[in-house]
Amino acid sequence: MLDIKRIRERPDEVREGLRRRWMDTAPVDEVLALDARRRALVTEADALKAKRNEVSKSIGARIKAGEDASAAKEETRALGDAIAAKDVEIRETEAAFREAMLRIPNVPNKDIATGPDSSGNRDVRHVGTLPTFDFKPLDHIALGEKLGIFDFPRGVKLTGTGFPILLGPGAKLQRALIQYMLDLHTRRQGYTEMLPPFVVNTASMIGTGQLPKMRDDMYHCEVDDFWLIPTAEVPVTNYYRDDILDAKALPIKLTAYTPCFRREAGSAGKDTRGILRVHQFDKVEMVKFVEPATSYDELEKLVKDAEDVLTGLGLHFRVLELCSGDISFSAAKCYDLELWAPGQKAWLEVSSCSNFESFQARRANIRYRTAEGKLDFVHTLNGSGVALPRLMIAILEQCQQADGSVLLPEAIRPYFGGDRLLPVR
RNA sequence: GGAGAGGUGGCCGAGUGGUCGAAGGCGCAAGACUGGAAAUCUUGUGUGCUCCUUGUGGGCACCGAGGGUUCGAAUCCCUCCCUCUCCGCCA
Image (cartoon, rainbow, N blue to C red; front, side, top):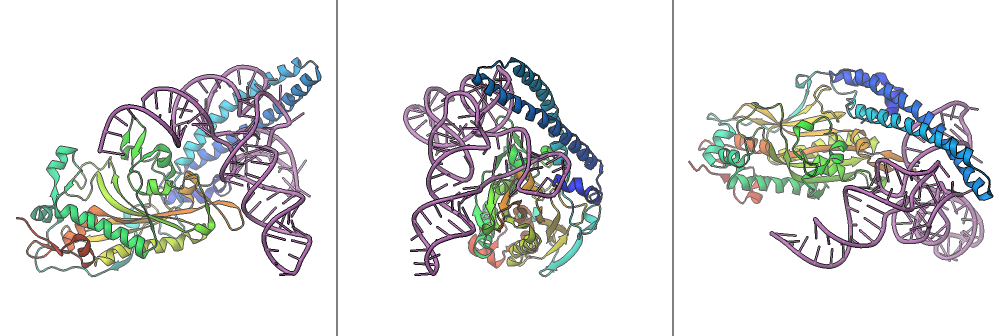
């Protein structure tokens, strides 16, 4: 969430941020009204409490001195009733205030393009060479069928649509890719690996901004009030929830492999074939906790770290700088990495690298002690490094051969224990 | 799942109804002492909210969380969460 002081002191800046997201600015005024009301109530209640404390103290003194204190007792009793009534009002106002605050998105960075949706994104650079074929390249579904590495019908039988099964070399390639990425992040890029819970509580989901907005997009275990994570960002960022970090320890760089669970409510019927959009997928994620002044430099480094995954595999991809209307709720700036899928002639998003500034840190209460000993919120960033299904699609489609085999990128061969996927039919 | 013990500041730990935001110790910081350091001594050392006459200012809240009793709760009662020990079950 945003700093209420910022909304109070520079409301136009926040309204402009909402307009740049093509959102209504009314929530800003709602927050300001609730804030003013809350502060007025707190001032009134505090005055009553101060009075009660004062009288209450005198009661103790009188009783000790053997004097009668019944008048004072009656006075504090009346004050207590007034305070209780005031406190109810405060509680209600604060709950409404907090709810309203949680629904205001981050303010887009001023330097990113203004645009309503993905049409406004800026094409920053293309990396690698566009693969060419002297035959008609297949899409990953056709390739997968030839290679026998997916089983969709039995995934439906076990769970439902959107829960594909990887088989044999497909499962092994997936595992090899995870290992390759984690090794890159930990050995070459200085990240610490973490294997977190895949199920978290409500406070964690609020901390990173999934709740309340994305409630319907997540799987919920009612009995325990637990949530299946939609991304490793949630457990890894919340690792430091309510913590105070030492400035000397920053930046902290963590990486984690986890499955990700997404209901994709509202996407029914979209991208239903293959593994492009599924309810459960694997991803390697990178998360950083940094000093505010460095967060935009750290974002550039994060993008580079994600890019290294793809360049290391020799894949062709592009980098987009998302416009104001396309960045996520919590982000101030975001780059997407998109892999080229020649079979379906489409760019596939495999990574989002975002700077959340202090937006998540405020929600999750992640602070650090500055060199001067003051407390301040850290800036958090995260980036996929990278999502597996679409990486798999791109490898299949970019590296396919005329005979239907797939010649694997060299970097992955030692992990896979072989150099190609062979057709079984 | 059952029984018991416990949750107090950065850490340890005292506090069983009133001047307790909380003794004492450790740690940390500054100063004194020293050629320098150690030791010693002195002083300081939580967070959040809020008000105004923005000040070495005032007020409120916080002793796991929430509720209750009371004029008044760290202290008494209830519920929940967590930790530890033992038992049961189990990968």
